[in-house]
Image 1 (spheres, rainbow, N blue to C red):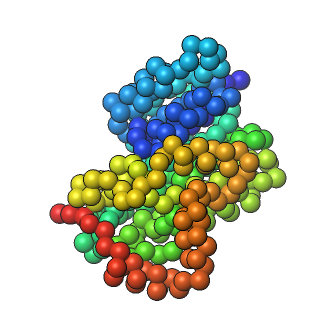
Image 2 (spheres, rainbow, N blue to C red; image 1 turned 135 degrees about the horizontal axis):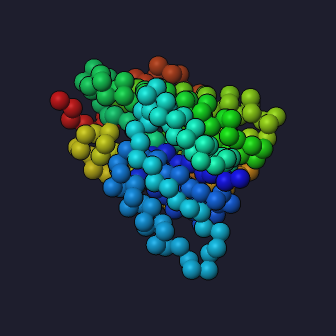
Length: 271
């Protein structure tokens, strides 16, 4: 029986880092990497394979799967992929890391509506669908890691739809953890604040090239994997993030949204 670990959004950023770290720690026999960008995905695969120690005999077979997972269509493609793989040989899924997603900076009124709807499709619809698609293949001690955000804890002005999608991911993940506990399946929501990835460049449409005060993705991912293995349901790495999440309980939702709208401007240029 093949043992599989799946990572989405694996062509860059935290997704690529999850792939690097899991490849050297997993007991899975295969690592499936999903992303839209075929060239970047293949590059990550080649990087991981070239760094494999000669003495490491348990290294998984890495499969790069270029696929647009967005929305119902993406979920359908993913389910078809699983069914095809099952025909070619039975397998179980040890872990899935739902990392694929993006954000947009700026007021809701000034960001392209299609972009916001695409965000909901990927951040919410796809993540939910992929969780549902893998359930028949999970087993006792399997893990689901859903990448949420520190933005999940409070509505945010200039970040309205993104924060809402991540609030959904957090709520869904905790509820799913409760439902799957008796089956021995762990579900974790990773809630990072600023991490040094390409997130800001995408969210600002190229205006902000780098995330401000971004934390090291290597440390964030390592902490996440350690806590997820122990069954931690909500994972926060930096003390600042933990404090922010805690204090959000005492801030009114409207007040938080109004304050961030007025004083936390996020540069962007959408046409």
